[in-house]
Length: 213
Image (cartoon, rainbow, N blue to C red; front, side):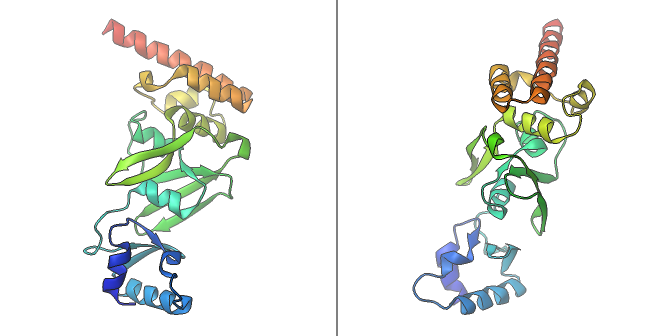
């Protein structure tokens, strides 16, 4: 396969997998060998085995970090601090994209960023949806409420006043407190329910402070 042919096939895609190139009776070993050569030549960036993106200047669409996160570990969704920062619920820039899945925890260091995966049980795999990220890209992302509950669930002491205040949560009016409580009740987790009580109190305090101002 010539590189120009590859551009015709994947030129508009932010990411592509080797399997996309194996149709039509081509030899997998030849395709993988050519991909390795293009990677060594700086025409491709390999993110994990079988997952690539075109390198500049051939790249038409820069892959969004959340799209990369979904692709690195199938069945995962972006959550925790990465999602909270996306929703502007915490003030800090988050350099690591953290996702959750039912697979084993792990990390990926790539040329396009650092990605971490936390394990949750199957019963907690809810509260996320596919969202539009612009440039024709979509990714599975926790709702604001689920991102906060995932963080509470996974962090020791995550339900304490000290921990939740340490997050410096802001714009809490963006949270649907009824949905937050319903998600915690669905999980049947006393820890999450305790956290909801604290977060609800924080949201009320924030609203009262704005009224005074």
